[in-house]
View 1 (cartoon, rainbow, N blue to C red):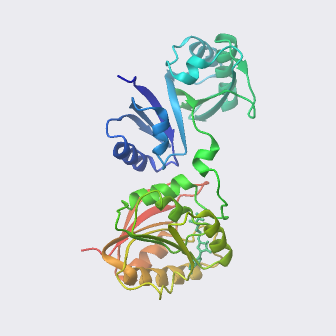
View 2: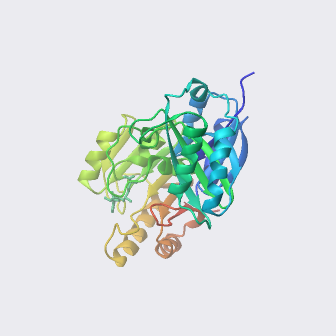
View 3: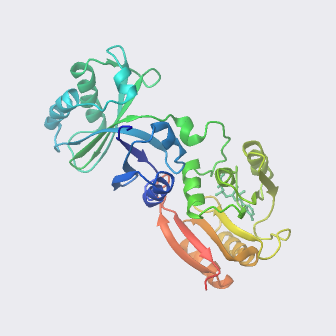
Length: 343
Ligand SMILES: C[S@@+](CC[C@H](N)C(=O)[O-])C[C@H]1O[C@@H](n2cnc3c(N)ncnc32)[C@H](O)[C@@H]1O
C-alpha cells in the first residue's frame, strides 16, 4: 500500500474552510490534521502530483516536522540541532538529495520573539548544511526549497513542492485589480459548480474568474467587462469555452430574465473607483440587474469590502445577502457574500 505523507497547503487567510472543502471533495480519503491561519495540514497516500488538482491553494509543501521553539534568539541553536537530527520522511525529493544538493530556507514568523524570521531561516539553514551536509543555494539556484513557519511556540518545517507558475497558472496577463487565480477559484468553488450552469462574471477584468470556472463543466461560461482593454486581455487569456463580451453590468439587456444560474464576481471596491456615490449607484444598478437575470434558485457570489453599499443595494433589489468569509488580500479585508432571491 502507498505510504502516507503529511502535506501543508497555503492559501489566502480566510479561505481555509473552502480549502478543506475542496480537499475533502477531491480526496475523500484524506485526513485533515490541522487548520490554521492561511494553512491546512493534510495526510494522504495519494501521489503528491495529484494534489495539484487543488486549485484554491497557493502552494503545496511536504510537511516534515512540527517542532517547538522558544521566544528568544538564544533558543535558535536548539532549532538548528533539531533540524540537523530529525528523521526526514522517505519522500523521493529527499531520498534523491545528496551533499551537493543546494538548499534554501524561507521563514515566516508570527507571535512575540526576540529574533527575526531571517534569524530563524539562518538557524534552519545551518541545521541543513552544517548538520545534514547539504550545500547552501540561492533564490535562483537551488534543488530543495525549505520553509519554516513560526507561529508562537510552534515551528512547522516543510519542503516546497510548487513553483510560482502553479498559483499564477503559468501563462496569464493580469489586470491591475486582478485576483490571484487561487482566490478566484475559491469563489468559483463556493458557487458549487454544476454541469448545467449558465455562468456569468459581469466585472471580469482580465478574466481570472471565468477562466477558473472553466476547470469544471458548464452549459455556458461568460465573462464581461465595460473596459475594452480588459475585454482584450481576457480574450487573450481565456480558453475557447469562455465567451468574453464587452458589457455594462448595470445594463445586461442582452441577457434574458431568469436565465443565469450562477454569478461569481469581484466587484469594483477598494481604491478601484474614485467617488463613493459611484459605488453606491453602481451596486444599486448591478443588483437590480442581478435580481432580473438570476434564475429563481440561482446564486451570486460577490467579493467586496463595501459592506454598507452592498447591503443597501440588496435591500433595494429585494435580494437576500449573506456574508460568508472575510479574507485577507494585500492588506485589505474584503468579504465574500452569497446573494440570492431567498425563499
Ligand atoms: C475588481 S476588477 C475585476 C478584476 C477581475 N476579477 C480580475 O481578476 O481581473 C473590476 C472590473 O470591473 C470593471 N467595471 C467597472 N464598472 C463596470 C460596469 N459598469 N460594467 C462592467 N464592468 C465594469 C472594471 O473595468 C474592472 O475591470
